[in-house]
Image (cartoon, rainbow, N blue to C red; front, side, top):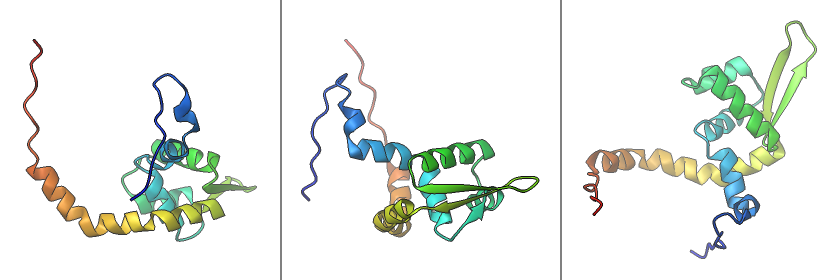
Length: 131
């Protein structure tokens, strides 16, 4: 594998310019990929999206959707009805991202039991006592 990242000196502000850090800051959240995967099924209202994800709180889903919308992965449409109806759908950028992370999602499904087994078998090292 030939992936390389330039080093970032602490305090230099260089981390803001790193594309990997910048993208992962958005999609690396607990609910971001799950939200994108559910939206890959089509346009959904907030309540349907929340129901499909299951264990996300209303506040966390709203926050996740705002970040995904801000970064261009999700389009939010407000319909002029009473009460207002709000729909969410993936943008072309969101669909292109899902194409790239689909192998990761498939890998997670195939290897989840191995990860859980390793996690359960892990014994943390003993603490190091300071002198």
